[in-house]
Length: 147
Image (tube, rainbow, N blue to C red; front, side, top):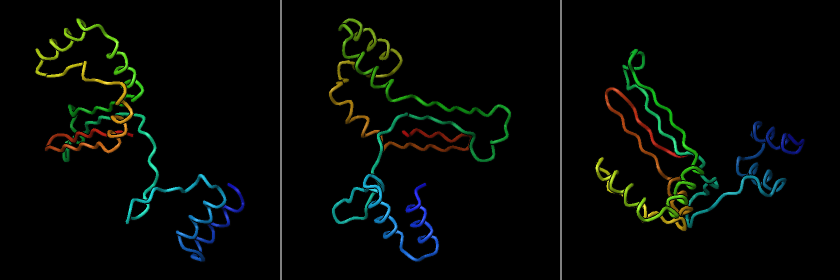
């Protein structure tokens, strides 16, 4: 850590400067550091990075943590794989798409591969950044989120 950064953090720890002053001073040392987006009329928000993984976890619910048969699942899917899959689906022949749609329909999923548009992929990934699903029952906790 650079000497100037260390000194600023020491001043903050000793309450010689406020957190806002420390952020401004650190930002002046490194113009890329500490940048925030300021929504109109609101508090500054940290700049978000693009999500890299879709994550699904299943943990035992309260009181079931030590059950021998309690299931634990931890799935981490790279969003690059999702991107590749959507791009791949866009070049599949129509007959293949129809077969996939029919098989998914037989399993109760109504899904048309032709509706996947690679042009909207970045918008989809950006929208996933806000995704967070938490389901908790007596026996398990399920979380779906991106990181």
